[in-house]
Image 1 (cartoon, rainbow, N blue to C red):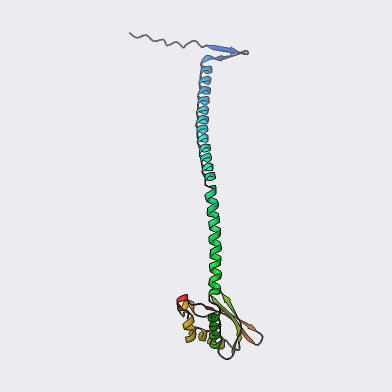
Image 2 (spheres, helix red, strand yellow):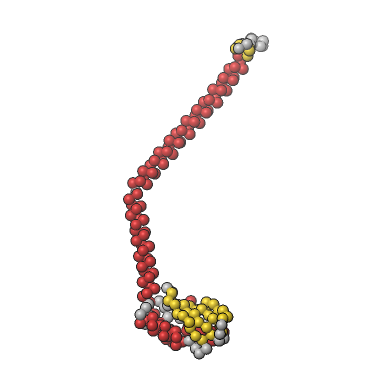
Length: 193
């Protein structure tokens, strides 16, 4: 035979400051507070460890960056030198096609302009020449562009592929007729006389 006590246990009460509280409730509250404090300390500990690891990684990166300061300075200096040399190369390319060759090219341009069309300026640009002038009619401008692109003298000095032929840039009406601007590209160095 098994015996069981079915009578309720006597309640323990704890009294403080004139208040009586059941002992079981006090134990549950203290256990809950203990669990919350334990979880809070564990979370704080984990975050502190992570923070220390991140700080160590930052210090390591800053040290590596400081160790490479001289190399970065040299790379910056080299980049400035390269930029300077590239600018010199661009300027050299601009003036390379000058002197007698430029005079010959200008003479060919002047000879290719048909009657009724005149040039006011021929400006040297890095990719060739920019021409501006006038004409009495649109047909005259068209003939001038066609003559500049088709002349046999120009073929010797300039590439005549469609992307490198004389191109009309703009047409405006002005005093005494029509005003136009055109571009005459340079040939690749191998095609120049």
